[in-house]
View 1 (cartoon, one colour):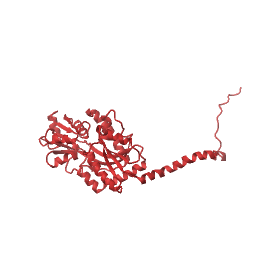
View 2 (cartoon, one colour):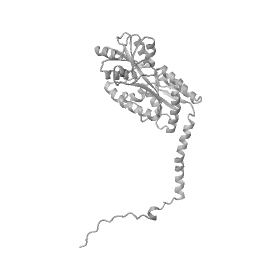
View 3 (cartoon, helix red, strand yellow):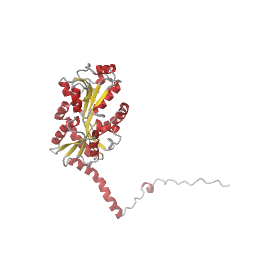
View 4 (cartoon, one colour):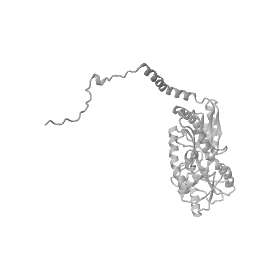
Length: 354
């Protein structure tokens, strides 16, 4: 009986001229005409990006500060804008204060702006890391809707107390709060503000029970603090340090991991009283997502040069801030990491927006 034949198998052609040199598909004149514009466009794209980079800026640059004038964001953004304008050979750099909903209004406007480097957002820890967990109906996503351009400064918060409170160090503050649970009132610029988030994180890490009194802005909060109606605040240095220097408030420590060059003599609470504690505010510039990469790199280089200059360093130091120039990628990594951190913190502390 004949044995069944195995299934047919197609064998590869033996090496040779025919296998090594397959016939090239014919390209008709019509097909060549269709391919040529796309090919030229692909070749021209890098040149176009370089042209965009070289041409920036072509008109006034607007930096949207998503808060009213006079706050810490405004105090840091304006000197940067002034010095950046000089670095851009006099091309106007304009600050536009566009407050509302804890920064949501201004941030949303920039997310929808043209992707040409002429509209930037002054973003900070609240706008780009905390807001997504405070506002359920938020109209922008910090990672999806923005291209990080440049980190400008870090700003340690200062744990300050009214002189009537019998404490002079962060360790003494924690001990006093543990002995008096629910009796120490602290102020912030509002529910979800950086001063609220920082003190809530500090209280959570220390295991102490404090009473939060939210205000609508740092101005009214500071007025009650100086009058003794509040006993503590964990606010940005520009808010409390003038009163500390005048002897009206007592600085107990800072929220940075190490000493701050702009706040000499102040001890990190993470070293003196609460090992590992660190929470600094940060400020930087972002552009609408989709802004060309070469243009982002060009803006980063210009802004970093301004931030590293002696005039800007001196101005930042006067506001209690430290210059922190980084690459766009490093700034983006910071935003993503901080978003995850505050997702947990806001849930644990039960923080709600006004």
